[in-house]
Amino acid sequence: MATGLTIPSDTMFSPSERGMWIKEKAEKTRSTYSESEINDKYSKGERRVITEMNREKLLTLVNAIDKPDYLNIQPLYQRRKRWDDEKKSRLIESFLMNIPVLPIILYEVRYNSYEVIDGQQRLTTLYDFYHNKFKLIGLEFWTELNGLSYSELPSQIKAGIDRRSISTITLITESAADPEEAALLKQIAFERINTGGVKLSKQEVRNCLLSSDFNDLLFSLSRNSIFTKAWGIPSHDDDPELIDNNLYKKMEDIELILRFFALRHASEFRNRKIDFLDSYMRKTTTFKQEDIDFLGNIFSETINLADGIYGEKLFKPFDINKQEWSNRSYKEYYDAVMVGCSYNLDNREKLIQRKKQVIEATKMLLSDKTNYKLFTGEGSTKAGTQKRIELFSQMLDRVAKD
Image (cartoon, rainbow, N blue to C red):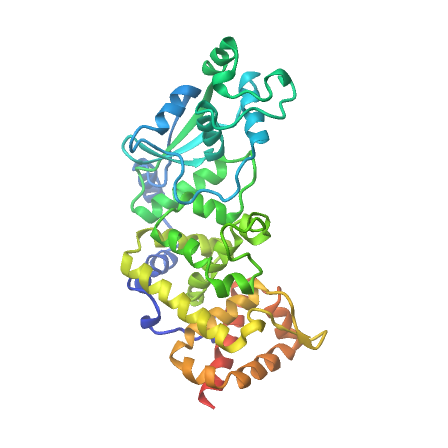
């Protein structure tokens, strides 16, 4: 489908971004394969995940955590939520009663070096328990053990727990053709194996499986003061209200930063939005430092421009029903504002000088009922996303050139 979406010049993309969609375009042109080609692909083991399944004694697994470069229990992608001592104690009680516990899922980063991609909370609990970092509380069936740490347990209780085991599943994607394909296989395997426990958000899964310098950048940018203020997220890391913030606790703030970077490539949008974000995130695992620096600057310049124009109205659209600016931010409107501003960074001085005209033009754009619906929730399809970005970018361009 043809689109009027403005495609920015290559100078708006980092070096690694400039050719990142070539492979998809080549694959898209070919849709049929012969039977012999399909059989050959299977024989070569392409797109096949290799797994190993084992059972490990709890104490053996805990000791492995301290072994250098062997088991990374706290990779940079770790989830923000933490188990409290009562939930940790219930896990220990499950082991004591020999109740089955979900397996730990590991990923072999390189030979004999593993990363925990699911089960970090379980392993952390075991590690803390064996190192006497918390006392058991809230036990239902072994209430007589409440208030005791591991070292304080009766000898037979300790021996009983030490004999318990937990299953581990190790993913080895050694058949992948390249790092991006390995990341895809890793993601598919994890999503299909992880059928129990606390359901992860899509961004928690991405951060769990696709740790990289780019992933670190997302976390860093999510604490940008303009960004946190616009989305009502506490800006100080030690703020007790931060962990209860809905965007923060499910990493939706991280996903908003990812949406900005990915939707700058909206002309390449295909399939569902979550698939497009997944694809962009996988491609970033090989980004170099020059890419990270470039993208960090683009985000900062873009959000500074957007804030310089809209200020308190940032990411809050004009409500045609109430005839006033909304008091809440919308993700779809955020996408259009951020990507549209990034496409117009060359016009930033004019746009800041003419911010009153920009605000009036924005109000006019949103006064159309069809557009208002488009910018506040409807049209999450490829066409709807591209249309939002197109309308907003063209509006900014008109104001800059008038």
